[in-house]
Length: 178
Image (cartoon, rainbow, N blue to C red; front, side, top):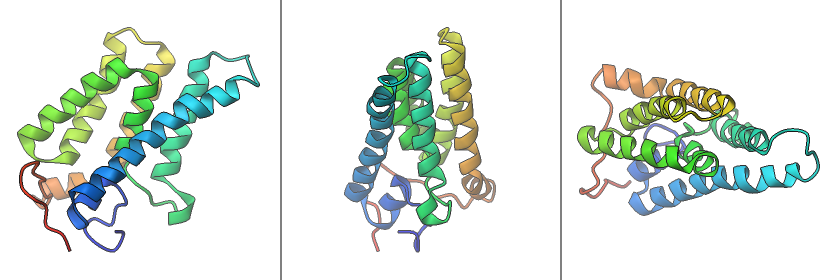
């Protein structure tokens, strides 16, 4: 997968290179990975150190999952873009914000056909949603960091968009496979 398409290990490149079903499997695994870290790993550590509030452990576990995905040691610090893992983390931390952010993503994707544009705009909406819904400050700051990381990881997509080289994906057309 790293030799074809964008070279990215995420769901979008998997859909483009291998097909829709394998791409959706990658997506599900990445979302589950983020969710699992927030719910179970944080819960494990909370048993041993009752000093901090539980959401701080959850934020740290989510941050570790995203950082490990985006800058994995096993791929010379070149991993995915963190959107799906961040979605799983958000499901564990703030499911209401996740669902609104997902609706933003879906609307933008259906209007534009660009997963990258939908991901960037949805990631920008999340800290705004956290702020206006009066979430704890640390959660709003964390979501802001996620937004910055997602935009940073999409630099190549932004260049391709500027040069009109970014490829669209259709929900209705069968993707080309190699």
